[in-house]
Image (tube, rainbow, N blue to C red; front, side, top):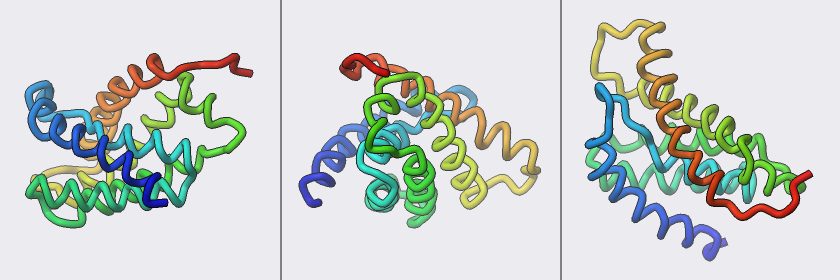
Length: 162
């Protein structure tokens, strides 16, 4: 189990550095992708729901500690995101879920859950209503995150998928 978690944590270090330095430069009107959700979704689809939740918890806590944000917000939202991505786990369809366009859709659902929970808990603007929260706080960042999931689909080696 330690070996399974150590590889995603090493990838997390690289992605967290990119998330904190490069991603703010490519944000559009304050809407930025979250690369860590793609990592959590990928491993939840490869190893299952419990692993996705545990990975979301660990990476969320580490990200909260290194980013300087409120401790627990990313941890909670990433744990729920890993839980939701784990719903799509099927040991017979791991390759289909990670190497086809299904990964895009699953990462979109997972990113919507993350963005909604994160914005709901950490909202700094009191004038947000539910519609703005759903569109600006959840759907747009989730779509932007899912666009960054497409290179994962393209880069995954494929065997004959059926």
